Length: 131
Image (cartoon, rainbow, N blue to C red; front, side):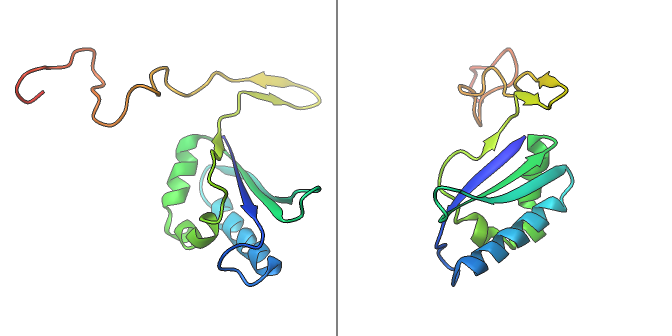
């Protein structure tokens, strides 16, 4: 799983770019210490130096979601909230190195867009008084 967040400088709540980069480093360090984190990067757009990207790779979505619930990661919530509001978690479908190509099936359930909280997970749903 790949997580990519974009942050537009100057960041609200941070005095300057150096303070924002320090916050990004601290946040990446906290995430990197969580089980399931494989690696992470902080990058700056070459054509737009006011745009930072914080990216990290995870074993799976569950590891990433559990990491966000960890106390030491929540301490960095102010930085995490400066991310541009857009999708940030992506499942890796094709991975390539100079020596190999690995394709993985999607882990998203076929009914993910139609089944939500409160929907039955069984083939039969009662329509009785309490069903």
